[in-house]
Structures are given as C-alpha cells and as structure tokens.
Length: 390
Image (cartoon, rainbow, N blue to C red; front, side, top):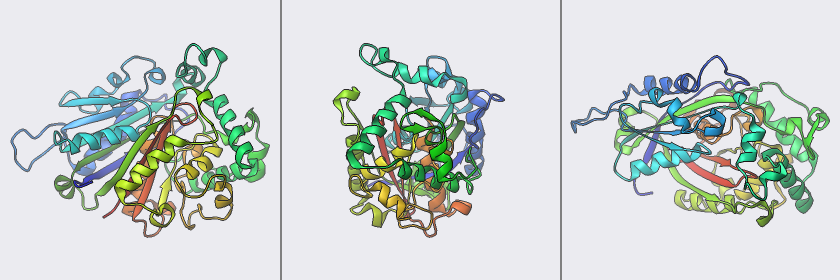
C-alpha cells in the first residue's frame, strides 16, 4: 500500500466464561476506555483544520443473535462515541471491522478511527444461533450447527491427509501451555496429551478439549493516518497487507478438507505486504481456531507447509514459542476467546508482539506478524492481515 495506516493503541478485556456482571456496552467500554486513555483522544472530530484532532468515526463488530436483538450495535452506541460522530457496524469476525476502518482511512474521509468489538456467548444458545446461520431449506432442518459441521470437516481432513487425533490434541497442549503466559487468557491451565485424548467426545472425532470454551470479552483499537499515527504513538504498528475471501455457502459444494478461501485471502495479503516466503518472513502468527484441527488446516492454507504436512510441522516444534514460526503464543481461541471478537484479538496480540509488550509470551525480535480471523460454518469467511513495525 502506498499510504500507510498505523495502529496506535490496542486493548482487550480478560476473557471469561461469563460476564453477567456487565451489559454489552459496559463490557466493550472496558477496552475502549484504555485506548482513549493511552492516546488522550476524545469522541470529537477536528472541524477546525488545526493539528488538534479527535476520533473521526467508529467501526463496531457484534452479532444480533448473540446479543439477543436486531441492530446489536445499538447496545454499545453511547460507549463508543457514536453520538459524536458516525458509526459503522460490521457483523461476523472483527478482523473485518479493522479492515473496514483501514479502508475508511485510505478513502481520505477519516484520519482517526476507533474500532471496538464485543461478544457475550454465555447469554446465547450458541447451537441455535449457529443453526440459524445455515440455509433454512436444505441445511438448517438437519439440525446442523458449527460443531457438528466442524466434526464432518475434521473427519474429512483427517481421512484425506492422514492427520491424526494425536496431532490435533498436540495443538491443544501447545496452546493451553502458551495461555499460562497470557494474563488475558480464559483457560490458564495446562493439559496433557492424555487428558485431551481422554476428554469426552462431543461430536466425533472432536472431544471436549478440542473445542474452544464458551467465552465473553471485548477488544478496542485506534487506527490513524501515518501523519497522525506518528503524533499519537511512539511505536505505531503498520498494516502491511490484508484480504478476505468467502467460500461457497453450501457445505456439499466444498471439499471440507480444503480451505480455498483462506489460500486466496493469504495470497493477496502476502502480495500487498511483499511476503514471498511466509515461514521465513513472518515472525509470529496468531491463528483463530475454534477447534484443534483448524490450526493445522489453516496453517496449510496460509502456506506454512504443504497439504497434509501441518501435523508434522507441529510435532517438529516449529510452531512452539522459540520455534521457527511460533503460532498462537497467546493461547489462541482454544484457551478462550469469543467468536466475533477473536480475529481482532489476533490483531491485538500481533501488535503487542511487534511492540515488544507481550510479556512472558513475547517472541524475541518480532518484526512481522500475521493475524487471522474467520467466521461461519467450517471457516466460510476467511481474513488475513499482515502487520509490521517498520
């Protein structure tokens, strides 16, 4: 990209199994308040043309069904400054909300944009929400949800490429171990390979510990033009490349062992960022994985290895902290991030890594980070963002 847009502040709540103590607006404001305090910005546009400036616009991300109302952004309007400027809502995964904010700045219409996302899975019947996302004539009536659809995808992937249950379980062991170093993680308790493989089957071949827990939480960040980013922050992180791609809607039209939308999104994001060898050029990757097998499948789609090779790449130690390409040093979704919020959590974690502010989970000398988000049944909509510190 010829013009640069920087991320100048990021914040996330600690993720929890239940935040019934707050409403959606109060939850998201826990993160919004932090980025406002860090930058000193106010919910007010600069209408004078002077060097003084405030937040020009807000982009939010939420999900009507989970919030239990239509136009779910109405729940948070007053908490994100929408009464002072315009607000744009993005549904699905919040990585796309950051993408939208980037586009608004590159359009020349805004200079400083707040992005905020929230989700309280604990208050929703997620099986019902997910079933409603499917085609009402052919798929919804079968009782499908994201879990049993993912089980079909896992079975197909394992059959086609020889991925084993043990390799999937090692994803959980790695990520839950990493979560011990992350104060924001929900599940901060290590598990053994035997515990994962011995946990209850919830939809074969997926077991209880292969599946992310119910989670509540929120994220916020502020994006700005290069000129204003440098004034607002001593260490802005630049968005170097971004893309998304949507699969065909019907599961029967796809080979579930493949992830063509992710392959296409990654290639475009890499091209924008000048990435030709992702393993050599990316220092840390934060990948959204609601289910253990997805980290392996998505790594292949991102070009970290060939098809069917992700299990062996994991076993080699390359994706561990200290490995050639650390994946999910935060602990990932498996350690507890809500859907909707997860893609933005990946960006927040990437920013912390590049700023050298990731604490015990820090990847030394990280200069380039990948953030990945997806939404929909079997990863229907895929998004990839490349971040750089220079």
